[in-house]
Length: 78
Image: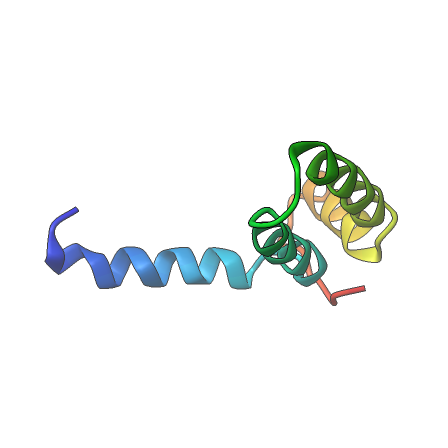
């Protein structure tokens, strides 16, 4: 990537992360940190639990509703 495009690309990525469900972002961040010291089996178990927690969240339901209603989601972190 050319140096002059880096700032714009970085800001676009940051906006994308900021628009994501906060609970999912927290779990992704935790997974990255845990992967440094956990086995593959441990990470797969952790990922399963994280996915279940995300699927049970209000943000998951909001994301689905927004998709089907063709609108932007309003994630709250719950």
